[in-house]
Length: 439
Image 1: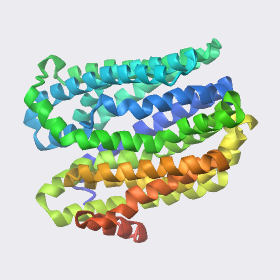
Image 2: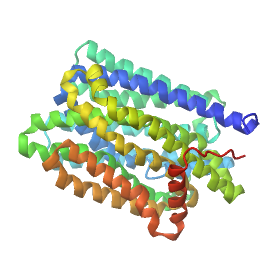
Image 3: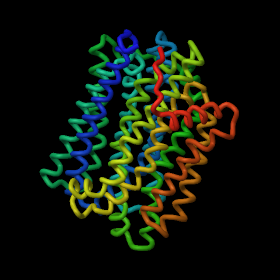
Image 4: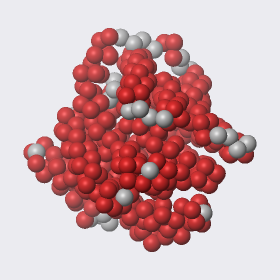
């Protein structure tokens, strides 16, 4: 197995994606530490409040089409230019809608002018998110090296920009432009890489037929994306909105600053399941067409690996988070270290949720995933309303854990088509040491 051409191909692809995520994680970690120490907990909280609002709305830039495009680039490579062109049109239109919707939102919410500017500057970067279609093309062709090189370069440009802002002691508003800088550099690098492979974006042929085909299949993923982002990010919005009425804006921003640092660290540590899922997705998609037993074996093995990754990261995290945060960020962020240690419990369902994406996509269970995501978001929001006033940021963590437990794992028991996934996920977790070799 390990000497086969197929294994070598996917292993090299995974290696590049792994290296990409590790290097970018280190860049983001170093940059986040420097920026956080410079801005302090209060201003970091204010910046991340704006970023959380945009993150919830950013699904409009894809309108749920990402999974469909990625899947069909594998199944129908001859439709490349029509698929990429139509995805470009969808993403650009979505970026325009996102900016208009957020402008209306921040004006109706009656936020202060600085927060409005932070939100809208960040939102402008979403207009350039169409370049992610090129990323999906390279990944569908198992060309992780190209994707990795582009991602690393754009991250270096973005990190360099933010570090310069710290060096010159720039005001908070300039840090909002850092997100746009990253997206713009990402776009330019991907266009150059696409051309380097003898391909040209001017050959993209968007068609109303393809746009309608993609949107007809992906609209559940749009709602799913909103619900999932709400489940992931609404806590940061609600921490400030709820606590400002109790302790005032400055204290609420400081609380959010501590929480957002812990969130950034947990997100950085969660890169491994994403790399694994992206790398294995083409092999799982092909197995679904060729051999259903092989398909089930590969998904179960993916769950096994995810659980092993969870154990390897969560156990050290729980015991070492606080001293590590204090060492890196300084004593001012001590509370973030305590929060990070309890975030370790969320990692299990985060890892399993990433792996479950392969099952959802290949089975076409987008409407089911929509329902589960909405359930998770509703549970999360409801528990946040109850727990944040009583427990502050710790309440948001437990609300998050409970919502993911229900939406990712428990709900699979209630439909016939997903019980097989419940069994595979359970088997993967309880027999994680039995990874089998499959062809």
